[in-house]
Length: 257
Image 1: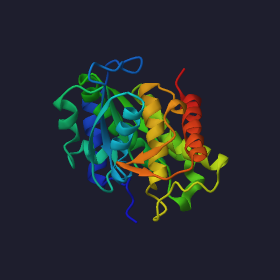
Image 2: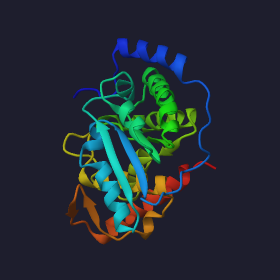
Image 3: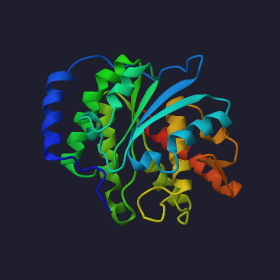
Image 4: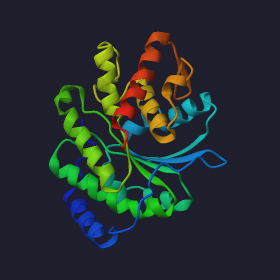
């Protein structure tokens, strides 16, 4: 399986130069931006972990089920690290600059090694001025390691936390919610068939964390149904309520003071 987080040597060099010259200084909003009259506007930047099962659309659907509005847009492509968006492999920067946002959700693959943690932080810092100019707040989405590398969960979390802290952004602990779900129900299938990308239920739990993390609205108050990528899943109510409870507790546990 291709590693979704490994940037090229040229990309590493480029981003170091760009960050040092372009991203110093500036203030970050102190808290989540209140929803505007048209609801929250959220841009997702990531890779296949974002577009598999349409995570952004699932977040928007969860919001609609609660009477909220989240308008989403996505810039994602296979096997990309955040630094690849920075160095022009997508039009992410142009999309950030295209109109105002409330949040920009940044998703990189499971970053457990120090070198790639550093480039994640640098790329996050480089994007920060554009995110700030768009009136938005950065939100770092923690994902999960492959099923064969579950021992690296703590390192994956640490990388995402440090990247969020580097710009005063939000930390969305989806990977920790996965661990919480397994602690409560070890047979809950969150991985898809390849043992890396999320199952539909894995995307739903991730979307719950994103929804509550961005809006502050309690996932436990949502209807007991699961709709992922526009498709309703036949999941027992007890399982749905368990996932909503886990998402709420996880977001609360990692919420910044």
